[in-house]
Length: 131
Image 1: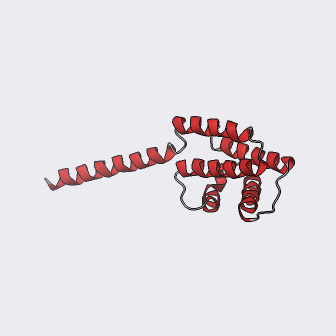
Image 2 (image 1 turned 30 degrees about the horizontal axis):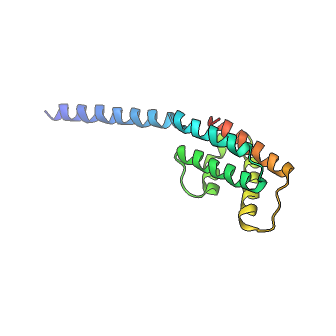
Image 3 (image 1 turned 90 degrees about the vertical axis):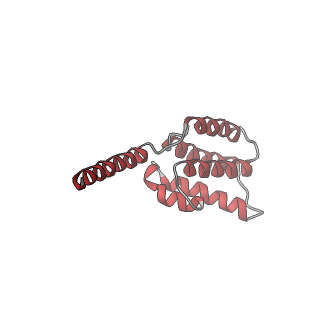
């Protein structure tokens, strides 16, 4: 009787490990959220207010990383998710521009800087397979 209990326990543990490995390998963004991100991205891309576009793109990246299971501020999430990005430095620079927009009232975002930030965010979304 004890042997059956041990065997059942080992089999249960094996299934539990397999389940955990399977769930971790399926990390990503659900197709319904990908659609929302795509639609929001199109609105951001067409936004004429340069400051607002950068703020919204940064917020959308935060949502995408949260869907991957990362917790904390966007800065914390970027640190943890660094291996997912093809060019993390560009993403950090875009996030730093967002911080300046949010915290410095007189910080100006010209069209060139806006486009540079949006290209960095767009590549980040592509790296996350969100676009």
